[in-house]
Amino acid sequence: MRTLIAISAAAAALSLAACNSPQDKAAEKQADALEAQAAATPNEAKETQLNAQADAIEQQAGNADGGATTANTPDTSPSK
Image (cartoon, rainbow, N blue to C red; front, side):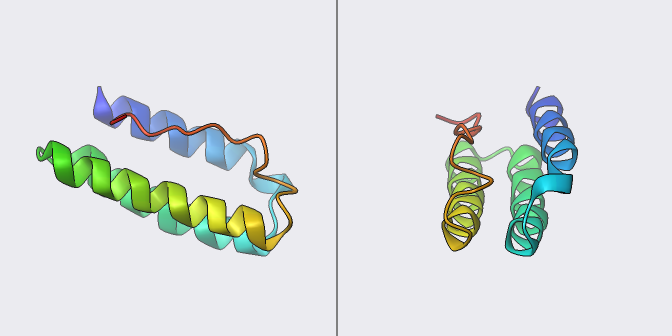
């Protein structure tokens, strides 16, 4: 289930890549790596931590471009 969520999140991110700024693209790549690690860990606390880091990275990138591409991005963390 966690893997499916991570794959879905990655697919959604890729579908939005065309309208993302360079900061968003770099942040998304970094966040995707963290989300993949989160999906792979059996430790729930570690999963929550990794997903929170990924969310923070994505939000910071959104703030870098004034929220133009991430203002409506929902929190996709499966651990909450």
